[in-house]
Structure formats: C-alpha cells, structure tokens
Length: 375
Image (cartoon, rainbow, N blue to C red; front, top):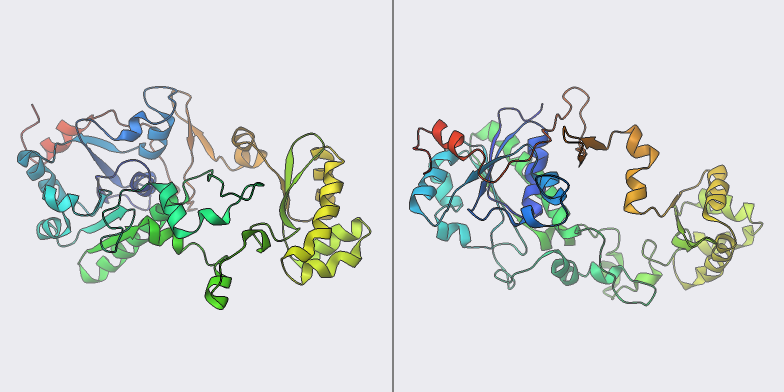
C-alpha cells in the first residue's frame, strides 16, 4: 500500500483529526492513537452494533490505541520518545493546550526535526476566535455557509453532514501529504495549521461571486445552485417523494422543455438564475407532482439529463452503484464499514476493519521503545 512504513501519532478525537488519520491507516500507515484514560469521546457517540459504536469504528479502524495521561510527566516523556520514531503527528486540541502539555510543535520538533506536525482546530492559532470553543455547526454559521442552505420557510436548515469537519480533515490530509513530499527533498518536517473556519470558507468558490464582484449579500433563492434555477432544484412527486433536477447546461434544459412542448421557456433558463425562472419552476412542479416518482424518473432517464431520486441514507446504501463499486465493506463480525474513497489500481487500500479497544496496544508499543510497561 502507498503509505506502508509511515508512522503516525494521533492525539485527535471526535471527527476531523480521526477522519484524516483514517485515510492514512487505510492506505498502510501505522497510526498510533494516543488516548486519555477516559478514551476518545467518539467511543460513546451514536449507536453500536458490536464492541464499539458505528461512529467510532468507521473513524478509527486499523489504528493502535495507546493510553497515556499527558498530565503525568512520565507519560509525556513516553510520548516524546515515541515521537522520535514517527513521521506524522496529528492533534486537535484548542490552541495552547499541547504547549502546556509539553508536546507542542517546537517541543516535538526538537526531538524529531523531520516530523510533520498537523494541528486541526476550529479557528486556528491566531485571530479573535482563537480561544472560542466551537463544533461544526458554529463554524458553518460564522462562515455564512449555513445561511446558504434554506428550508421552505426561508430559515437556515441544519446540515445533514458536518461540512466544516470533513473539509478540514481533507485539507489536513492534503497538507500532511504535501509536507511529506517536500521532506523527501529537504529532510525537514513542517507545521501544518488547519482551521475548520478557513477550510469551509475556502470551499465557497461556486457561491461567493456576488460578494466578491458586487459586494452584496447573497439571496440564496436567486443563485444557480441554491434555489434560483429551475433545473437545479428539488421537486415533489405524487406519492409524497422527491426527485432533483441537477444539470443547467442548455442541452439538458432544451431536452426537457422540448419533451414538455415548451421550448418557448428555454431562454428564461439560459439567461441565468433568478426569479424570472418562476414559470419554469411552476411547470416542472406541476408535471412531477401529478405523477409517481418512478414514472418521472423513467421519463427523465429516456431524455438523458441530470436527475436523481432523493434517497434516504438507508436507500442510498442499497443503491446498485454502492453494490457495484464495493462502497460498503463487512468485517468478520458482519458489521458494515464505509470503504476508502481514494482508490489506486496498483496499490489498492487494504483497510484493517478491526477497531482497537481502549489501550489495547499500550504495552506492546511502549515495550518496543524499551520503556517499562504501564502498571
């Protein structure tokens, strides 16, 4: 696998950091998860279908769990000895915490100048929100992203997935891999600072145009991907279900409106998003609401346009595409796992679908450092 031989020390908890290090573990890295005696709170989040919660095992499979109390100087010294053998260090504490614990970047880099040290937190190490506690929803609110997803009542809607967490994890993964690539040339590691706020704001290039070009607040219901376009929209069907149209290219617009005998409406769509598309929205809404969803899906499929049913998450896991692409894996206990999204032809991932029990590898890992085992 691509990352065999890479050793990662992971002090992160909850989602962003563990999601980052999961990708490393799935592709062969040895990820040593350092946990407090209480363990990662993720061990207690959500439902369980075996020895651990689904949340925990889908973020921490294939890792080793070592329990250390970093407020104990002996355990801190053990961690620093472990750092000397590692390539990557990931932490997700609030700014300043690792320095107080004695395992900040400067302290770690003195032991290992080649270390790639990645800090993932809400707002980064400087700025007015540096010390402000926050999870995903607060970051989505502050960046304005939450204001761009409105319900039918015009109010911001709670997001279905933690976008700030996931984007920060992926930016962190990119930063770590860039730093490792550079280290091959210089022999030096680096400090990778990842803020959830920065990562999410950077993920808005498709919607931020009016802000940059015109200096104005955006009306989501008038934008091309957030409600202002008839061909990028959710429609109700006769049987109480929904489908989406999701392609605004002229060829797709022309095919649908020609099939409905309303090519006269094409210019309303091709001139861009906005309230002027209301007649097209009304036409499509009336058409789909008069038919069961499957009938409309079959009709759209014959036109070769961009569309999809609005699946529940359960329906999505049963989708033929999920089966064909092996996007769900089963472990020896029959439990399901989300498959790695990064695929290589020559060296495919071989994820270890076993998650560690709390402290499972403490003695073995510390013994390998010629340190006395924990009492």
